[in-house]
Image (spheres, one colour):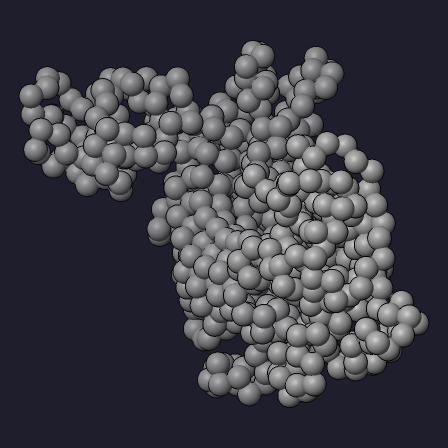
Length: 536
């Protein structure tokens, strides 16, 4: 407990006494006009303050946000505890039921993972022997310092994983001190610690393979400095750091990171794909997470483009391709609209796992592409939006896609080649003739060859329970005509219907809202399921 301003300094990280989750930075020390005694002005991380650092017209400091600041008495604030004190508190102290419910760690993807205490007494007994502890979480316990350095290694000599999420650590030299005492430490999570801009006093962390730095206020210039202390890093998580540019230290492309397999840049502010190209020379990179940035396109650079981009800074070695080992690219929640960006993904040599959800191009509700078209356009992808692309789904999607393109752009070969690069290849591969199915006066046999087997399923609560029906329908049946047929099939009188296409692997069905489009236009094939609902 603190009782004078001398216990604090400007820029210090503190938390409210009794609430180590309410964390802020000291921005002012001294008197406040109209109030007696000494006050501490705090800019709170969670923005749950009362003002912007001013009170009664006097600006004592400038807070980060309009209502993120407040003044507090020194005794209501804590400057934290040491790492060893936190370990004692977490693993040797008695826990209440409420504390056990709150026991969780943040995963590398920034999700809370609850810690379950099964056989609590035995676990507590084992964990009380610190020399046996290999993994520890002291998240949100107010850790502000390592404590006595030589005691860390002697107390927890076998620690391999350490979660320091949401504490008061801000100095990199303290991080270095902790790591030096833990030679077996492989994974370290420093998320939600507001780290200093100057990276000083950080030694070589040769054992660290996984480093999680989500929401710590770091930029790429600092990452370049950190790189020299992380010779063996394999996973680097940099979520929610407001990173907008990739700034290599001495050239266009990021160098080093010889063993980096996974780079997580989710929830940042990168808008230009040229910034991402600066990562293309990371030869061990297998997974790149770019969800929830503001990227609006994707393209793969050819050799000439890379030579131009590298601009003589590096020799573009023969045989080395950009992103040569990248197999997973997560792009969910961006602003990609152009189908050409989808086609560009085929140029990545090893790419088999892609996330495109929550982009306009992949949202049929915004005029985007349905899943079956994505599958057909992405030749090598085995996992799309977290769902496996089976061989059956691929075959059916590619056939539907070919028929869809044929119906939309009949006979316009140049336009087809430009807008649908895989069309000709798929048409040959699946043995599909370049003509629409014959109908009308051509006779019953040709009419039958154009029939599609469709399952119709009622889902509207007001419709009531009705068994699903399988019907053979001409590919030229329009959505409007199908609605009328459904009224007859299910005996639905005076009811306005809406239809959805349920696609394998898609979390949500696709609304069929253009009554003039035909089943063939929509790429609907044999075995498709159409959901019948009532308009609200």
